[in-house]
Image (cartoon, rainbow, N blue to C red; front, side, top):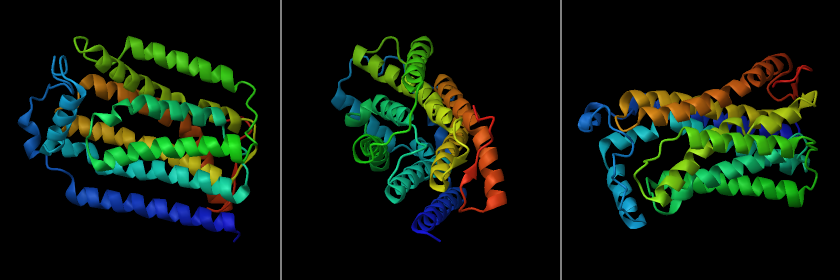
Length: 305
């Protein structure tokens, strides 16, 4: 095996074992629901007028108090942790591909820039809404890793894949996501303007992430073979959203503070994004079954979008 194949196999095995370990731990120790009934079953994520006259410091203290409540542990269930590890592994696959091949061929720069916009819009609360050290580290990792990927594509490798319709597709995606966020969101209409902006940005990021992969799928439509590590990157990225969809379903059933509107917004985004990967998942598994786990993935000439 060459260096690329060895690193790809190491990354795949590491991701698989990490995911299985998280799931095994969660099955044996998922948070108990006995104390989750402290809040009424119809409680919203943000009780009415709670944040109306609160400053950043008060919001931070409230978040820290909530993080100590038993019901808050439902946020960090096995499905979410597995999704997070898969998301991180997707960055590992991508960066290994860049380093070993010294090329970013087959990767959409527009999709990476959209993902950076997703994380920047979603994590505006990173400085005043502390939930846990794990949560904060993950936010910083996703932002920094995406920025580093874009830096490598634009500065170090300097051979981004040609995307003739990339700018137009990105503009349409951003515009539609913003419009949908304005029409259907989960913000408190009576809260301060800064809070409305943060929650509107969060909703925008959910909708945008659901379709940020479209420029990447457009790139895949023009190729016949996808490199092994690139295919592993896309598979891990899609699998992460599937586990997050399971996470939303689990939290909706056991977490009384998970509002119905919030779960609808998150579930819609996860369902749309997972659906975009279905065709790729099928081709990925079929190709790996025929040619082996370390082989490149042969694409269907009809494309995947």
